[in-house]
Amino acid sequence: IGFQFPLKQVTVNLAPADLKKEGSCFDLPIAIGIIVAEEILPPEKIESYVFAGELSLDGRLNPIRGALSMAIMTRQYGLKGIILPENNAPEAAVVHGVKVYGFSSLPEVIDCLINNSKTPYHIDIQKAMEENSIYEEDFIEVKGQEHAKRAFEVSAAGAHNVLMIGPPGSGKTMLARRLATILPGMTFEEALETTKIHSVAGMLKNNQSLLAVRPFRSPHHTISDVALIGGGQTPKPGEVSIAHNGVLFLDELPEFKRNVLEVLRQPLENGEVTVSRAVASITYPASFMLIAAMNPCPCGFWGDPKHQCTCTPGQIHRYRHRVSGPLLDRIDIHIEVPAVPYKDLSNEHSGERSEDIRKRVIAARNIQLERFKNDRKIYSNGQMKTRHIKKYCKLNHDAQAILDSAMQKLCLSARAYTRILKLSRTIADLEASEQIQAHHISEAIQYRTLDRGVF
Image (tube, rainbow, N blue to C red; front, top):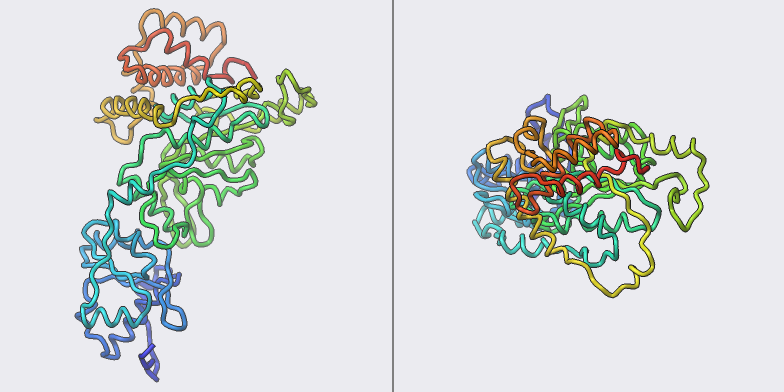
């Protein structure tokens, strides 16, 4: 590569000594340090710059993980800029106030530092947001299931978690994949946070800048608790963090191991997850919408008019009780998703587009943003605590009468009571109604399938 390695002992000190150092990103700064020590490069040329990159044996620079986080750190410390492999430059360049330089080899880096021969990498943030915010799926592709589609609209409008119960092939996965298409578009701050997590996890493609599409993650039911929540010998984000600002879909919910499901309780409650290991304790953001799906029984056909269920009552009971009560407490909407009749599948009539549904969702979300503008970490009805419910969920006389009747006749729990009030508040917001009315309560009760004893 044009440089003679010094034929003497070289000591490289990575301080502080008590902090574990690992990864290939130190290759470039170590090489630069040796070149400066050999007086090939003046020390003042590297002042106020961060260097990170993996060096191959022929001097080429290979991409690394976490370049976006490094660029943010560079800005926080008030440094001039950061020098990276060229494939990492697009993601780092989205950080304002930091000069980002991308290079393909070590000689290019040295030449630039000596001759100031390269301009910083620039990216059009607005263009990147627009280009990367296109979804391939659309709700118009879903045939039938009008009740479920309405439930998903309510879910998106209030950030309510959803549990779908139905036989195989009823469209549960299809519905879940389209939830992100009706959620409000990501802000730049959300896109930056999401991109940062994917960068740390090594999931960004080369030359990719921003992730402006809400993530959709669907881990297999054999996943371990570490892979779901994050961790490992070298802590890295798990599925709950990779789904941050997006959707986490758990299909065949009862098939997940009990300990795997239980670790979901912290991120669902706090919107973040802390991974503690001997070497470090790291907190990752994990604010996502949980969409879960399950069959009504092990064979999947309990209650299906066209298929005979082959399960015993004991098998059905054990299957349904694999999901713990504390986890169900954190799911506001329980809906039945029956098999779609042939007449609906063959019907040429198309439903609503995701774009049309999203407009109503955004209008409802704006009402909630105004409502909770003075509350920290509360931005939607799904996050309301008891004090918020008491303050904002005012019922008129007819609505209160329907709720009282439902509580008595259906023997609903206190948990169901608060969930119904949250849902009715969201339904009222979709209609821009300040007060919760009778039909809002009636619809909310329909979204509590498990409480109504349907299954």
